Length: 164
Image 1 (tube, rainbow, N blue to C red):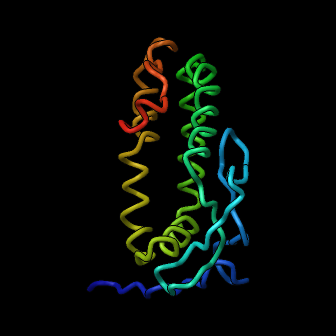
Image 2: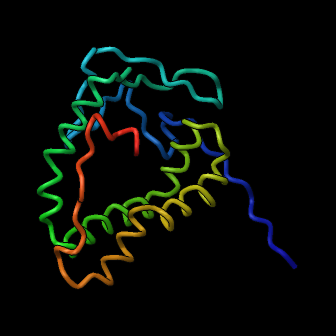
């Protein structure tokens, strides 16, 4: 005999009974902090679920990409000098935080992209956690002997960013 699990209904993000809190406006997360877009312009973020705006997001431009690239270049050397053990610890904390908040992330992602929560919760996010760079880092960190074994070979630049 099989058991039928009832379908859970999730409240719209931002409502008091929702698992997701939504701010009225978001900025770009660059260099470890939230920064407004260089142009100062924002746009409505429409949910495919309703076709209505549920928050404002930056209308980012090439200038914002350059700011993000500058921040990535500035962080590259410190990250490259960080031991694989410490990098593994940091990436494991990210993965652990994602796993601890799967339901909230699934609702937020579903509201943003229109997929059913059950698909995001049971397929997309678990797949991300098992096939992502975080999963790779967990695996590699267990096997690497030398802390200098993993190095960033070439920085991302305006010229080669189309490769990523």
